Image (tube, rainbow, N blue to C red):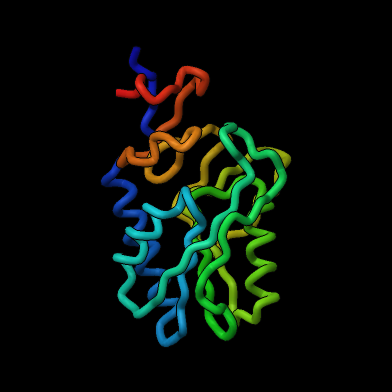
Length: 183
């Protein structure tokens, strides 16, 4: 059985967007002590491509947080699963996230970095989901603004699967997914 996917952003479109974000970030952080912090697991592909698009020196670290588990909707409970190895004190932190929905996760992570003495904390998100009546967490650098559709590909998953797709897609019925059906 083939799963009906609708491509939202193609591989080429994503590359152009990431390159433009890299240009903007390089301009903003020139001469600063930049630390990119990717939020695991979803942002790892975006972070890798974004890092390669930067024209300035920078370091990379990771932080883990989850509010989904195996669901398609956030539980509202943010669990920190990994703290960064790099001491953030005095650093300019750029949190790299795959998607912002409610901002609960980013609020918690931003607070952590500020408490630890970071010089600045900003956010770069590939996707910011906008839903009428819901205020989304502000991001400083945004690739795309989307509706509330569930997305897979380019690092985003369903129950840990489909991160490897080189594009971003949506599907009408997530219950159709299993590890043997996507083609």
